[in-house]
Length: 169
Image (cartoon, rainbow, N blue to C red; front, top):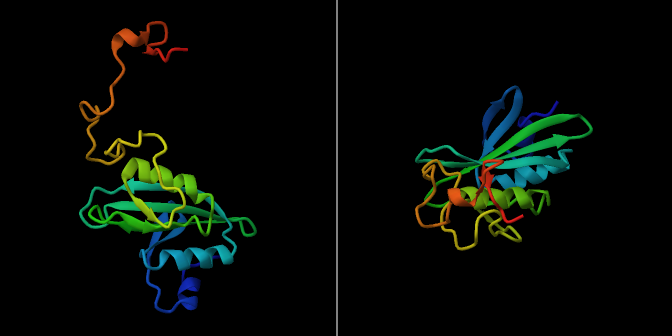
């Protein structure tokens, strides 16, 4: 059974905050430690990055949190690795050098929350236009969008049979 204490044995100066996610162990680590801890986890058998996602905690310190969901196929264990950053300096190290599958997940977190992944090979927007200067999943983003930024569908463009905008198909 994996324990983050094994990471502490390998790196005595390593500090973390234990996190329980519905019975699944996790650790909140610092930006300075996340790369070497992730590398150690991969060497320990956590070869699959199942998912990575951003969270806006809407707090002054550590506002944004990136959570990596990892799996060890041999032991069938799952763990979570978490890292936080502030709104004023929204930078965390990219884990694409360890798990290439983190590429799209980190790009999505960048596009939706504005978290910058240092060392990412292709950090650009996925869903929003390049010139869009806002981040739609931040808690302070207006529910109806930013007036004048991206036009919303008009009722005359809607297909009346399906109550969805006519996309020209």
